[in-house]
Length: 600
Image 1 (cartoon, helix red, strand yellow):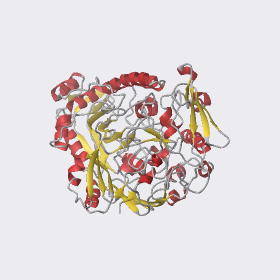
Image 2: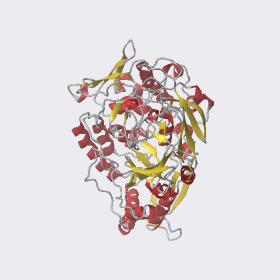
Image 3: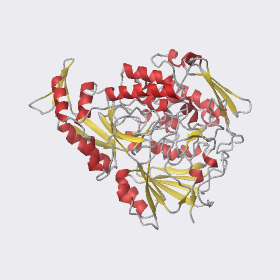
Image 4: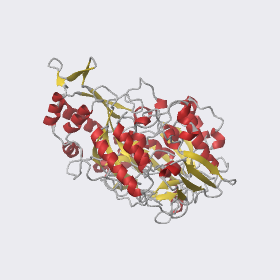
């Protein structure tokens, strides 16, 4: 029950996603049942590397992709997305469809519908407690409690979606305002009928995500202590029961150690005895570790890093560049003075020479600048979407014509708004330790200076600040996306298989943190209406039409500026067996870590 769209640091190239009415091909097999190539060995250790540290394992309080990489080996859900972009079962049985009778539509969109969930028999939590769909149901109830406590839940709006988010007080969380009418779990806990009050396009993403154990969490107070309970580096993290193929045995800001979960019953036991995750603080540190044969899997590298690892000694490993559903972009904080004017946002977009930026970042590579928030190859992408063309002269004139003129004494554009002089000088933030990002912001600084908008560049630690949850930050935390203490933010979005989840929680005006993930604070009536219309569709053709309208409105409202789509660079050591290719979606590269093994 987590959002499909995650904040990350990698970038995107196209991948065609075959689709059904669910928005993705449904395959019947579990990832645990997909055998890796070759003959897997049992035992040994594989070491993964990341340049950013993970911060949080509780999926209620994080949307950072590094955290997903870290917690996926220990926390699974009913369904996931495989390396080919297909929905597959995980802890659950068959993925519900109309054809298999597990998805039962109502007569009309307002009649609601029913989803029949199934759980594999005999599953256990890592502490030996039976795992049932009562645990799944408990997570829904817990999300409501956390949301009402207002301690900054990142994913509660996804786990317990509400029909009318404009309501206040008790009316907001009243049963009649919840999309989910009921979750009726069978006596044996292996099946559940979920009834929705009205059509809800995000139902599969809602049902798919990782969930926590009822027995452990049910009596815990819903306060800041709950936020800290599963933080990386906390002793309490090791005490929380998990449902994945591994358990955590140690964690710190330097890394995480895992061991095989003896109570994993959803598939064959993990091949590895232990799995390690090491954090290096910078791209250079991670790349050096891979080239020195210190790690078996180098993650979260962009195509700009490919040249740095492609010359790896063949006796150590190889470099790959795989398609991924990701795009690099600028977030514009539309709640801040100046950026709350769509004219200013349009001028900024017109001032950025994306082709020049790509030629500097990736010399000699034939890449297409990004425009749409639907990457090439996604089935809902509208090819007709157009973004403001690069034209700094026209951008400057647009600002002049709308009263944003250069002050001859300061050299900065300004305008009197409601009696207050507002200067156009912005703080640009990104995650630290990434040279490509600093180069990008350096170029953006040049482009904006050319139209009289100076900027100041600031970096922040990704896990503890830039991508940290609302609950883990304050209004004084500089460069926090969720707190909105930035003007322009540079990072990548990683797209999942849930069309509605990708966009509603990121752009609807009701989803401004701490409620949801709308960190640009965009509030656009037409955009909201298009997202509401999208949410009422289950049929793929209707979803695609609604998504096209949404894409056109995003290009007009400009809460963000897509820069480029790219591929995911990965360093793969020769000791790593069972690795086929990078998972392109927000499921992440560790979605099937139980199938990995040590090559002899």
